Image (tube, rainbow, N blue to C red; front, side, top):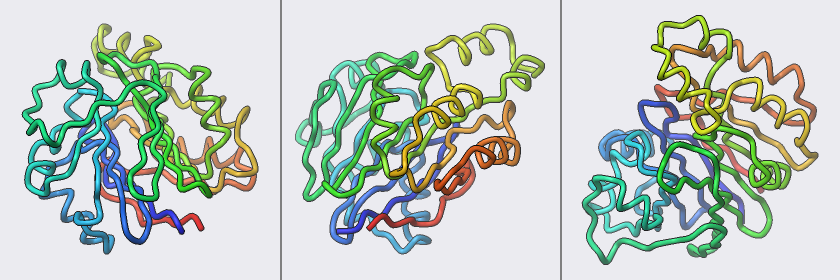
Length: 254
């Protein structure tokens, strides 16, 4: 069965990714409002009724701010770590909360969702790979550094949402205060264009059909700059920039 996927939004203003098949789907993070989530799903011809679970990567507000309303209104189960929940301000009904641990694989209908640990300045951050035993999609954002987990799963994916948060020179010369620049580039903040490109160049495989550059900084990156940087090194992979202002198209792996 084909996999359908889209970014509904990605950036410091909110992150939400839709991945599913013709019958069922999951959301990875719920960082935009319930209203905006529904609007964007509708524009793509998708429905919230197909969403059978929401997986939360970590507790920062741009990943959870729409979660409580969406989950309660549509009675959608939430998969989250205990530490993430305890370090958030979320109010969720107990019957909708499901805890996962590192390297768990959760089965939702015909989808397998694997959680793996990553570097980020949160209580217990995770990234996810979703597969249907035929194709695999990775959601790798909010990554301070490329670790073995990221490398291992990146080379096994058919499509990836990969963070390319900032251009190092733009960040260094930009208006951010020193503490924020340090937080972003510390190794537990966000992934630079340079580090993301090294991952892409060294570990892209013939399987990788789509690469979506994600979680771009509004102030310290440029969509055209990062697209051209990656496009130069793309082999068979199609490269796109996922927006912080609107949804992507729906893409299909079959």
